[in-house]
Image (cartoon, helix red, strand yellow):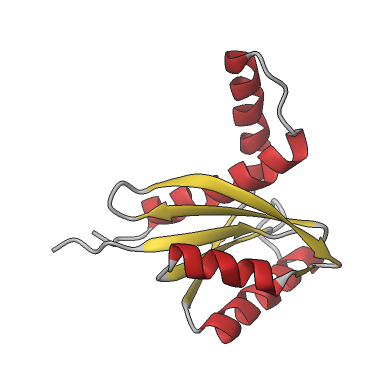
Length: 145
């Protein structure tokens, strides 16, 4: 029996938070938006609108560990954000190591710009593509089906 799960993923940052949506059947995700944050605090009303629109069964937040796997200040802040998401919306929350997701997102954005001959809003594209990668990696690492 396969489980169909829609999830929202977040690439947490203190100024911007990338968001993506995906579903478990195809294990794919799409970039949605980049939310402004004030010292790591998002506009919760905007997140609530995304929750109402997409009705996710799970949230996934990328955890920015150091390259040696240790925690840093941003890891702790991302964990607090994850806890607040769960507490506010009562939706299952998961985390996944996001090391190198922003670097991979930059490469993808660069390829998109070259393929389409357009210039993209580089930072926004990177944040939301990083959230997409976080979610796709999470789907690949969990046994939902």
